[in-house]
Length: 444
Image (cartoon, rainbow, N blue to C red):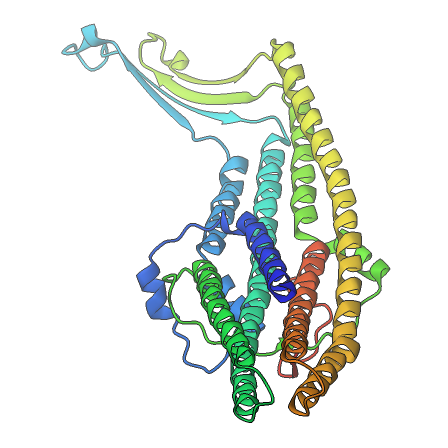
């Protein structure tokens, strides 16, 4: 049947979206689910997308992981730029033990390594740039989680709408059956009409089971992001936020190239590699070692106190040239990665923008034309059947068409919301770029 195929197509699109979410979910490392369950309990009648997003960013373990990675990376800056520990050396002549104090032989020496000017500073800067890359990675993970959360919320909204539509249509087929039985009792219709109504209603009951299973699947994925037990309660969704307008593509492109977290990560990596090249140039210069000591082995007391200075001899130029080439190659690699990522972001932004435009047009078509026509067609078919002007198959066909239109309208709304999430991901924005107040919800 056509409406069965339509419903199958809708679930196929949901499953495809869920598979895409696997890219985000593979990062998630569940910790203590029971502890998180005790901390996050929903008691409200409905949940908004903004609340779900905030809870996921707060409870998801991956946010804590990247935060810890950044903190560990940030702590490397000071050690990298600090002087080496001073060295103390003590030497003695064992055979002089037991001799008089003047002949006992021993030696003390205190030394300090001093790097060539600029080396310690550059080592610290390399560590700082690397730490900054990890800091920007926090925003990148946050962006990924936000996009996944919004897509899941769209699925959560659609599945509840599909269940609601299913219940309404079950009740409607009960009404059709009652009409058919009444007409059969008066000899105006055959018993087959009532049997057909029973068949269609049972098919809807079967579809309700499928919808419930899909609802549990989405619930488990949402709870996984929230680091909760997979069957923990989450309220039904609030209406999806009103989509008021679509920003200009050029402004979104400029915003993406300036503030996308993934670009900031690569920019910080480029800065680290650039500083590493400068550091590699200084490795051709020697480091110093200054020392001071006392040596009682000298008979002449004037010779016992000593001070000295030393340097390493950077004779291995080949290894230093190789290190510089490696640093330059990494910098070149990072720059080309940035160029590639900029191109990819612009491509994804263009595609996402076009898909949003398509979704808004489809949603408008269903709301303003197809839905009213389906309602009108059903009302006409119902009136004609009651008046004996049409058969029961026409009535059933009209109802199936109306139900399919309702489902596709709900799917179009969910698609528009999900594609806006894709657009926001391409822009690099966690916050909504074109939604009205969340309280101003919309129905399909």
